[in-house]
Length: 215
Image 1 (cartoon, rainbow, N blue to C red):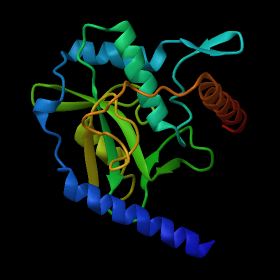
Image 2: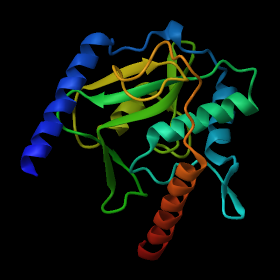
Image 3: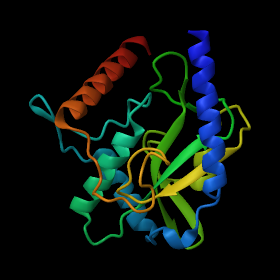
Image 4: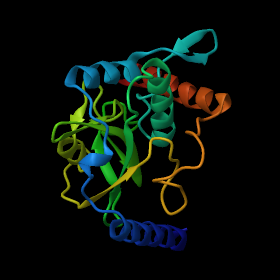
């Protein structure tokens, strides 16, 4: 078991190093769509609140309140929702945050299962720009409003000061490079199946119920 953990950490560290060499740590502004501030706020509320996923006989929003995992699925669902409800907009880019060490990202979350933090090997969210500012749409990390890029990175670095690599990918991309077509995907966004969506929604429902009982 210990050998397996050490090998896994080595693989993550090596992959992060290769990605940091292959991809600059600054997001080229010309690759991000330009949105007005009111559109950023409005679209953030859309992906956070819009109930369109079936769970039993109820409609649910994207499961932002189960932060442990599934960030790539949530990003895909958000891209699809924006494409459907706001077809006139240029789609946001997907950004992937990776710790540039073998230590995981860590964020404060009131919806963590145990304690107050969640940890990730990597984390995916959506990004746009307004002028020279980059805004990240990530209700799993900040439920109340979009975050400026530096604030988003700081939240992923809770009580730490780790270097973080940011990868900027096409909105239809899936997974981590080099095992994904980050810049030039050959197909549209890979939505999770209905079965997978229900699985995540049930996990979120159980988490909210558990939090209600013990808080």
